[in-house]
Length: 424
Length: 130
Ligand SMILES: Nc1nc2c(ncn2[C@@H]2O[C@H](COP(=O)(O)OP(=O)(O)OP(=O)(O)O)[C@@H](O)[C@H]2O)c(=O)[nH]1
Image 1 (cartoon, rainbow over the protein chains, first blue to last red):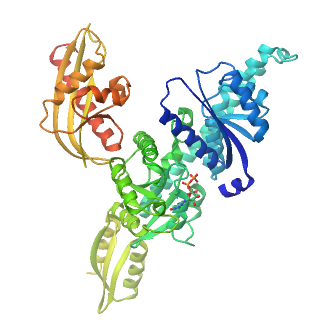
Image 2: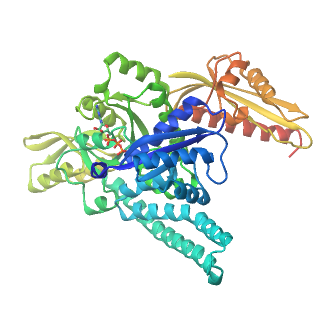
Image 3: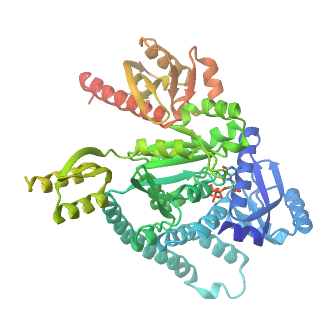
């Protein structure tokens, strides 16, 4: 999906304003993150512009800097100007007018990313909701700008202002209702998954960490993801078998620094996918400078703290092929206090997967192992078939009876015992 | 595993014309995402007529931590130090100091928070203030 957008190659200029006295490292990190986000959304970042000053009410940057920006637009002809700083409607209007280029801020960029990745009905609704909630205060502002200019004919519209804002509010409410219904369906889906004994592993991390690459090379190829129920609600869910245990793996949206609250709320259920998992694979790009990885891990920990239920975390140091062994070890050691269950892999080369799978296996909810015997009969065989479906049959010996080494979750073990007791 | 001392102070608001504060320090070993073992907890109360500033807060933390038999990096929420940059606060402390980062540290701070709240509630009751 992304590669398609990349080949269309939209161009963008990224812009950031810092208050005087802003920490330089932090600022550098933020502009890098903005660049990564822009690239994740399919833009080719052709130039960057930064300025240190307090925000200008009308242009956000200084007037002179906006003229400079207009020159850059003339030179590079980008499709968009992307600001790191939140802009108000007036500023967007003024900058777009002077630069003759569509101008958005970081949150709209994030919305674009979410929008391109929203594939389920639910996530589409969430994106739409976030967009409307972003729009609502701005819709009011646009109207008051228009009013101030006293555009001819506008005053005659009377109740237009109210009805426009009301329209947005109505749509917001409708979407919220619908999401709630879906949310309920999802909860029962989750319960069903648990009763079926599936464990859910979800991939989390910053954009570009290599989540999709890892996802694609980790999951069992050609294994269709469960039934339609799963595929419609969790489209990026595929199955993976580790030592006989079947787990469902889900790719998710990435973490992003300072998401505004209206957006976090809108995406809460998307995040739920991560946090209602049994295991989270926290993927990091270990080829980046350690300080950058650290900043990103910090954001992940902060986000997870707000959301976390009872889940195990495995920190996947991806792109290990780009580092020397000792560099990698140093990086993992240094970040140890922020990295639960660290493991190094290369999603691209497929190395480190055995260790990763072992770690996943160790963190799976526990199953029990017992020895059983069944009568050598048609009935015994059909029970054996059932055991194959419900757990792992480690060993079968056919003698006068059928002797079986069986592993499964507690409920299945108990059921198996009660069925078998009927024979004796 | 990492040895930390998670500290939390409750009661940093005026109660009956004074500040009745309780500081709890939890010494523990944490992993990146969990508390592995708690070693000891120290609790101290402090009363003051004026609102505490950063130096007062640091003094309270150091006095409470001094009662622990175990060492470790002192960890607090940034808000407890009025969001001052970590390196400034670190330079004032005698011991190693940092703001909470990992989930393990956050869990431990949460524990310290519950302890200081509960202890303060008990203290106010004993003092007949509630
Ligand atoms: N050298 C190397 N490159 C990798 C590895 N894994 C992923 N990459 C590259 O890193 C880039 C990002 O990978 P993705 O899998 O798209 O990353 P992602 O985390 O899914 O990113 P978003 O889709 O933006 O959230 C791609 O160019 C991959 O080819 C790896 O193990 N080694």
